Image (cartoon, rainbow, N blue to C red; front, side, top):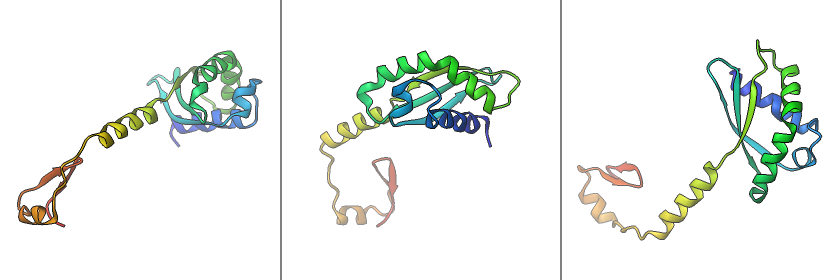
Length: 135
């Protein structure tokens, strides 16, 4: 197991067991999407996405308040030379994907007929990032 996976599993356990003493963190649904660990293992960033994205600022504040407790609990579960400093970052990648989806949906893409594609079997067509050479 990678260090990122071990740290993520430790954080998930702390949150599931309600050890943070923060009602928002202990009772609300949250996903830890990504963990970024510095090369020296002294710093870690947890990228999270709450089920209710409107409460993202509340979650950030709750994580700040519970940081010491979470760090202590992770230190008891993960045996590293140093207990890393912890930062929590709202993961906006899903929001960015939704924005891109809206942009693509709003653009009228030129429809290519089957005959047109068949005529160009030898010439690849770039369509939505994929090369089409035949049907």
